[in-house]
Image (cartoon, rainbow, N blue to C red):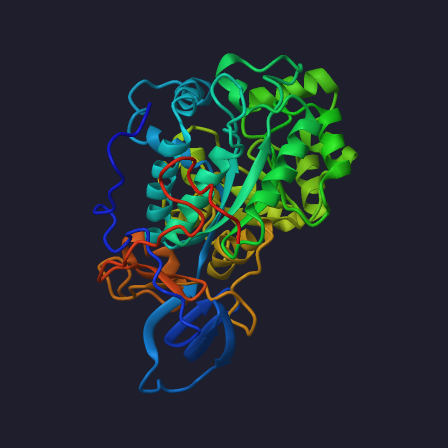
Length: 466
């Protein structure tokens, strides 16, 4: 499956791949600011070079302040596969399960080129910005040509994603992903998977180091790391990665999304995937486990005791029929809960928030499983920490990433401020600001930002480093 035609943003009003010029200093006055710490009124934020330099609470607006109404921190998308967007609206009619859906996903991956991926990712990231996501962790494993040959120049697919994020103005943590085997038995990659692989752990480590050098010091784009899953990376390779990967690099991996995968691993190794990861020292505060849907009670305790993050993706988990994970139990055990858009069946952080709570209610028969403050923390602070980004808490030094919502729409009118995130949708996003720049504004279009590192000719984004 492929996308066709040029990239157009008319379907996302105001999101034109938008970066306004960075002003050295500006001031926002916020009428109502809602954070995981509570509700604040009359807040003036002085922003310098993309960060909050000074904060005043309980003040009236000054004449030159840029006035905002209802504001929350920028939403942080802890888990995304941008190319899955081409499957939206094309996989619902044939039934089946995750494994059948995966066949269509592999076909989509096979069709990607650096140019088409840049166009597609630009479109997806623009939709994210219009929905209020200000940062995204892109779990990326489509590294090479379909026949497994590396691109020349190298890193073409990774640089295509970076160029797309810069064009839109979204923060991107490129979670460069190790993918080595087809299944838990260590079988070779299938033809549809060959472009994902680097041969062995050392091959992946070397390519990731080189990518990090190419990306360099970029205010919007950083390079993290991911292990696709215990199905795709054998335990000795995971151990090797843990030996070499710097301790400050965020590490993500899929875990316990499908019962079949977990059962196969248990049969092969005599322990659950979470137990194996604990034994190898892979669980810790820098670790983010994606989904965690089918964990044992002992696994929940392991993950919580390690202080790991679990990235729940409620709309995708529902779309794929994955099941409802033990999010409340994980949080009670000490894990942090973050949220992601994953397969892009929906790009709306507010629906992910509601989906997390709705799943808990359906599984437990009880309401109010997470407080509104905890839900907002999952969608903002916890996501930032999972990606190694500073959270936007509206304190001096914090990134100036925020979202303005409409508190008086047909959906939100009458909601208590702290509960408005449970009534709003992406349709209520009025403005998205990243590093002090407005990257989406409902009332008007913003000029597209030219990528300083390259153009659409040749390898996308493959221009000189700053």
